[in-house]
Structure formats: structure tokens, C-alpha cells
Length: 112
Length: 114
Image (tube, rainbow over all chains, first blue to last red; front, side, top):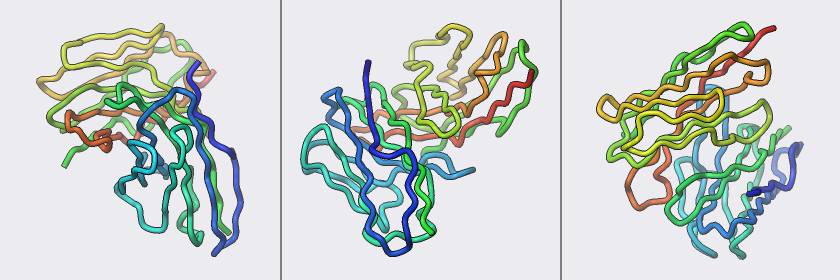
């Protein structure tokens, strides 16, 4: 059974904190993605990575950075959390041609 | 700009009834279209994937149709169950080589009442 695992289901952080969201996949996929999901806006792409140490900005990268040191792990970093980054964060992975995207269970982040 | 529009935004039906969700897209060129089910507080799970040449695909009580000429897809749910209550998301994959080629709809929130 394929698996994409996000490190936390729920997180509460204070404004200004540095926040790390971790994602691990066990399918040897080349592509990994970070999305945020907000009511009425659907899923919006923050960053994606197509190989180890390779990354590209998505549609809303401001305030975020990513790290992919190993193929199976893709981290999303909020350098200085702000209240407008309160959201559901979803990690996904896919093979080189994105035959299908597999999602993690999501991390509900609240910044207070 | 590539877009995926879903309708209705929300739908309430009684258990045992059928329903149909719609998805219109402008993504071109087109590779495939996927329907995902997302339970509250969970990540999306794939229901079906349809390529350009496929018109209909079933997965249990879920049947997806695709008309690539009119760029429309529908997801039909037969004999609904309480567990069908979820958000249903239509995702279209373009043919470009970029990994950002997935375009997501905003979803239809389905509520099944007893």
C-alpha cells in the first residue's frame, strides 16, 4: 500500500516562530509537492521538487521555503510564521510523469 | 490560464439517493482527469483517473464520465451512503513537461443525510 506520511496532524505555533512540516513517501517517487488548502480556494501549489536538492516555486511561495536532501523526504519551512499562514497543508508525491498524485493526511496548522 | 470549475459548490442528499457532480475545464493540451474524495480533515484519495480516450470509468458506486470535446466530466454516485459525505475534487493534468501541470477544482462538498 502506497504511503505519504506527514509528521503532524495538528500544529499550533506562535507568530514569528520557525515551523517545519515534514513529509515522507515510500514509493520512490521523483516528484513531491506541498499545497495549502483554504475554504473556497481549493488546493494551491506552494513548492514542488522533481529530484533531490531540486525545487521550483509554485503559485504561492512567499513566506515559505523547502528542503529535499533525500528522495523520500520533502520539508516545508515557514521562516517566520504569520497568522495568514493558518491553513491545511497537504504533501503529495508522484512518479516522474505524474501518473497519479498520492496525498498525505494533511497538517492543520494554526498560527496564533 | 488553465482553470477547473466544479458545480455545485455544495450538495445535500438523502441516503440511498443518486447524485451527479460536474467538472468543466479549460486545460489544454490535456493528459488526464482525476476525481478525488477528501474526507473532512484528511488528504484527498483518488477515485478514478481518465485519459483522453476514455468516456466512462467506474469504481464501485462511483462512475466518472468524460467528454474531451466539450471539456466536461461528471462523477455519478449511486445509492449514496453516509460515508459518501466528503469533498469531491476534480483535477486535470496538462501535457506540459512541468511538474506544476496539475490544475485543481475547488471541490463539491457533498452531505448525505440519513
